[in-house]
Length: 128
Image (spheres, rainbow, N blue to C red):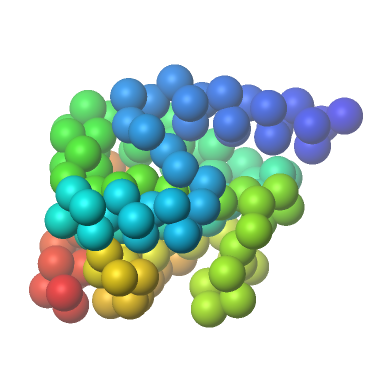
């Protein structure tokens, strides 16, 4: 019951964000190529309290949302969505930055505060 509640809470909260969260890498690649944007992938899990905390403290921040509008955003629940085998799906939350063709150019793991998110974005940009 607790797992179901956390899952519902996480999905509900992700949907409350002003960003369009996709659940398919293939669809994200099509959109990214069309819009000439990179892709940000956030991988979480049903029982992940850190994932809920990351959403509440970071992904709901307006400055973070403003930056993420420059990306095609993808949320993959490792317990429900198809996670491609080239992504590590354990040790969530996980973060991936991809070129429009799907090439990974930066990955990270763990919960980040807002400042940590900005550092992660900077590191990703440097690795682009």
